[in-house]
Length: 143
Image (cartoon, rainbow, N blue to C red; front, side):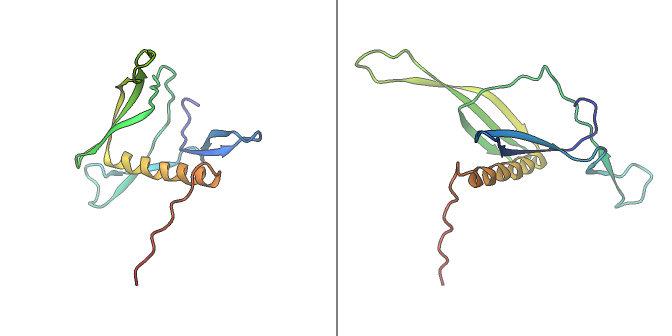
């Protein structure tokens, strides 16, 4: 959908054969995105909204990860390092060993981190509803 003005919201749904599928719901074109600081010469407190156009990059690389090795928030950005585990050659009568390598490092602004948290909560709710995850029991309140 390159070149369309759209807002994307990702979710997980169930396919008719019972498998989980990733769905992308498109909302109305030309949706205002986030408030933008007023341009010079306007009244203080005035804000404008920007229409953000999603442009797909077909050459955008994907990275496989089987673990999250580090998560760190320094007050300015959220840093997440994804890792991949590779097993060493398996030999008889020896312990199985392996190594973990960094696969991708992602740095997010605080706003993007909040968006990631919100979307992951939506994914967790969908997985719970599908029976893949069980809701954690709420701790008993003390009277």
